Image: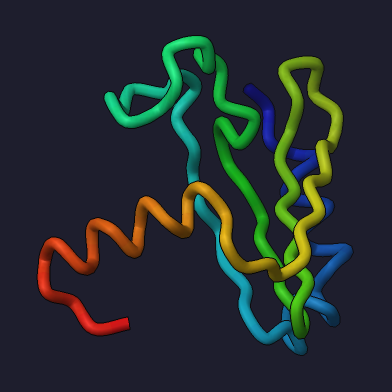
Length: 98
């Protein structure tokens, strides 16, 4: 996949990137391979290269669709999620303080 558009997006966000509370580049695999994920979830919506920014209680991840368009995922800080509960269970089992 050609990532020129994603590179241009990162450059366009440079001022916001520099002032964000959290920022990073990450990579998602195309298929979910973890046995803890639902079997019906085959394709990962965060596949490939991602730009992630957070300010306050909001987080945005930008990736590219399979058609080469920018895909924007928006999140707001919440509590009591299924994933959060799984992580807390793992931390408790491992004796990690949170």
